[in-house]
Length: 98
Image (cartoon, rainbow, N blue to C red; front, side, top):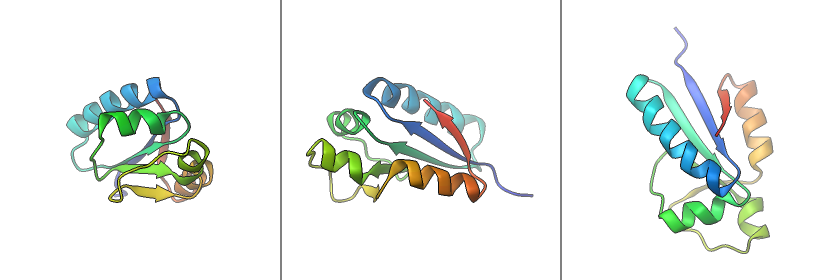
């Protein structure tokens, strides 16, 4: 059986807060599933302010550059959130916009 895989997209500050609740709920309900939290846009600043430290986190490099933000070196970046999410969907990941 194919494992459940979910990308939660948080493109705004408010969406990051919702996404974190979604992430906790999903992990509780689906402990064997794979999940990624993809942050872009103004959500990057919110993620920085919260000091997010989660292996599910993926951060848009375009958004980091646009906002001239400094992010922790440990964060996993993707060149473009839109392209990354599209590719993940092609690879069988479900998409939820927080």
